[in-house]
Each structure stands twice: as C-alpha cells, then as structure tokens.
Length: 86
Image (cartoon, rainbow, N blue to C red; front, side, top):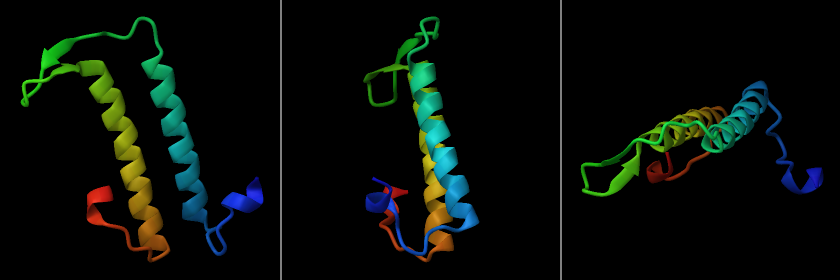
C-alpha cells in the first residue's frame, strides 16, 4: 500500500508535518462529532437553512487545518491547484 501512495520527491519536513496535522484533524473531527454530550444548538443560518452550531465549529476547525496544510504543501513543492479548492 505504501508504494501506491508514495509521491516521489515529497518527503520533506513540511510535508510530513502536514500529513500528521491532517490525520490529527480527521481524528479530532470524528472524536468530537461522535461525542454524546456535544452541545446541539440548532439555528437558522444567513441562508435560512437550519444549522448545528457545534458541528459547524468542528467542521470549520477541520477545514482550516486542511487549508493551511494544503497551502504549505503547494508552496513548498510549487504545486498549482485551483483557488476554489483552498
């Protein structure tokens, strides 16, 4: 399996840190999402849709971590990706 996901030339220090941060963000997201005593405050957002406040916070933290890591990786390895992805 390692051979399938190995990307030649991407073994730098920043890349490893980003992968660890991304894995930690995934684990934290799932752990907090599945917490029984998570506050469930439901409200209507600016679009008029119902939204869960704690879920939104958890998801935003998750996305922020991924966005920062993607920016780091793309800068370090000069990878171009569409701005709408970050």
